[in-house]
Length: 172
Image 1 (cartoon, rainbow, N blue to C red):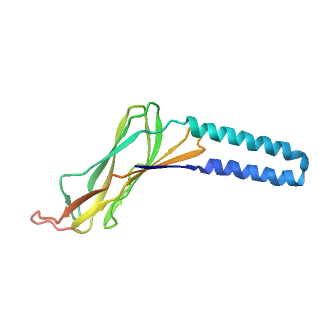
Image 2 (tube, rainbow, N blue to C red):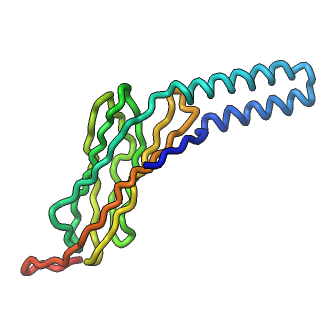
Image 3 (cartoon, rainbow, N blue to C red):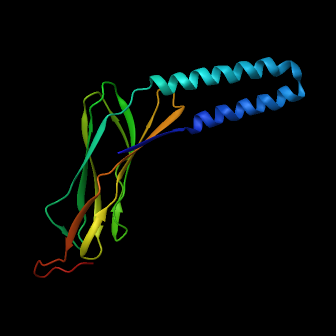
């Protein structure tokens, strides 16, 4: 599992406002105190948001049907288990093989403390053979939304897709 923390769009916008204040302070020297106060306030608030934000303790498990068959829409489920002590809001993204068509799931999930949820999405294999699903990506924002915690859950899995053998049925 890989985790990285990056500034969110909100923090970048607030920083851009600080740069505008710096430009204004260069033209109007009496505004330099306002710019310095903005810079210090942003630094303190962003640091506190990063340090005290609850961290998601999340496990992800993929569940497939017994057999994946060419040309048939089938449901894949992701079980998200949150083991943390405070509620979190997550944005999920699953990577399926490019040889399959897919209908995405509802990406944003709100999980309470010690809660789990199952998210379903549909895939349709277009050819038979051995395929690998990539990792599951999660995003979580801190309490004030100034930082974005990105997590890659290495839930890589390989599976076999079978041709349709039902009499009278053909894949479309």
